[in-house]
Amino acid sequence: MAKAWCLRGREAILQKVVFEVRYRFGFTYLDTCGRTVNTIMREHPEWLLRSESANPQNAPLLSLSNSCVFNFSALKYDLSLERPPDKDPLSEEDVNLFAQQADDLHAITVDSLGLREFTRIGFRAWLLFPCSSEEESETWLRGLGCYRIEPGLVSALGASVDSSSFSVVVVGEDRKYRIALNGVEQQAQIDFGQGILGVRARDLNEKQKEFLKKQLAVKKRLRQAPEFAAMIDVDAFQELPKIIAPRDFIATSMAQFRAGLSKAVREGG
Image (cartoon, rainbow, N blue to C red; front, side, top):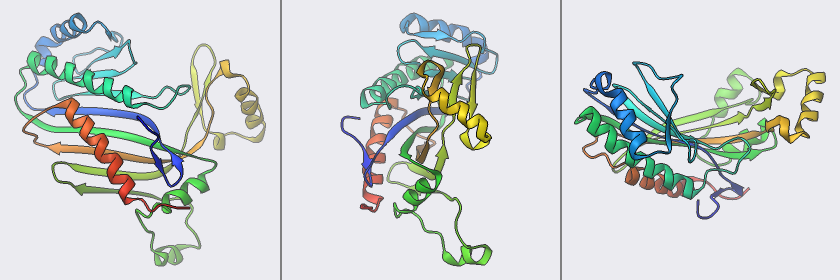
């Protein structure tokens, strides 16, 4: 993003974005999958077929330029881009390239599969706001002023709230929005040479935690330090869309996410 996106004093980490289009009568995929893959790789050499995963139900491709993943099938296609654990958050330039890739691959997929009827277009983004603990993430989320837990419910069953989450679907002017808020504990990705092991600090005993702390100091052996965060998951979508314009839909959704969340959140604290 061009400038830091902050909510209540915390800078957002854009962790992942996904663009998806669902359609009807895409079963030409069964006849033209290979031809479609060839066209994509010929016209856009950055894309490489993940041959070990290709099958009659789905054909995934990977971009050599930014590690974006593209999947398409008889029912839908989707592109996803995720921030690597040891890299900076996704930037505005990253999202712009992602949107251009969506435009390019949409044109090829529609032409190859002869698509005419679309049932859904959607763009989803995951925003993380780092916190020092699970308790802090819960407190910060409730302080946004976006949802409220009735005290009567809590007192009827117990004394306090241990954790909470919230989700709602809002009907906008030209699309719907599904917004979800919850606290998350990210996994530590430990590289053991032959594979990656994902662990949560809370699942380890005290001796194991000590070993994990030592791993933290050895960057070559660690993909990502465990940390807590508050997550805002926003999904913008249209059902039975008349026009599919991937780049425009992604750009306008991102702008509306930012403006809407900034307007909704109670500042301070």
